[in-house]
Image (cartoon, rainbow over all chains, first blue to last red; front, side):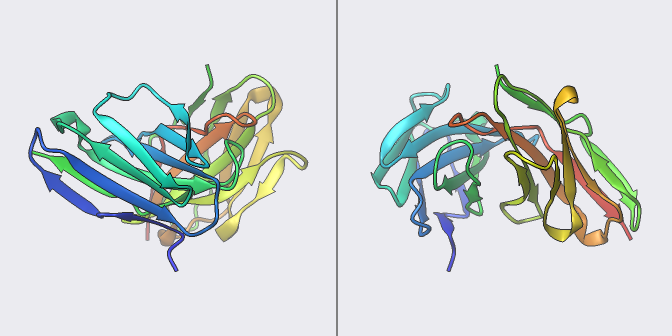
Amino acid sequence: DTAVSQTPKYLVTQMGNDKSIKCEQNLGHDTMYWYKQDSKKFLKIMFSYNNKELIINETVPNRFSPKSPDKAHLNLHINSLELGDSAVYFCASSQGQGSEKLFFGSGTQLSVL
Amino acid sequence: AQSVSQHNHHVILSEAASLELGCNYSYGGTVNLFWYVQYPGQHLQLLLKYFSGDPLVKGIKGFEAEFIKSKFSFNLRKPSVQWSDTAEYFCAASGGYQKVTFGTGTKLQVIP
């Protein structure tokens, strides 16, 4: 069983489109995250939810909107996609916040043309 | 502000060579430290972590890291690398309940 699963694995789309990436964890964790890994492999946190409540919201354009229908799911919706949004997006989860081991999904490679 | 820096961006070693990857952090107060590995085409996974206690931490696959508080460092080591260790290695740190901050990563290439 996959602990943290995200779909799709690859996403190729045109500028200006709206797309969503889904993430689910079956570990019973309370906290979920979205990380963005840029072309230089730098990982930067975007959002963090704890029990469906937003706790970390880094400086991310308003076009990015996370949604957590329950603590096992954290989806990422992106409006009006731009070329600079091309990156690999990783979902992760942990039992607690900050000091806990992160479990990562396999990543979604987003290419905006 | 909290930060993590990895000075080696790309390391190339022959098999059986010893490895040391540098990691320095800037945090106020208690710090938790991690090394994550990303094998080609795979997701990140935890190699080892330090929360407290013995500053020499043993991880999976023969890796270890030493927390040196006076130097704000948490370097990753392995006495003898294998071709299968080719991957990207990320140092990370967090303070208590704060977010985990990652370094920029070090690409390790092991030549058979």
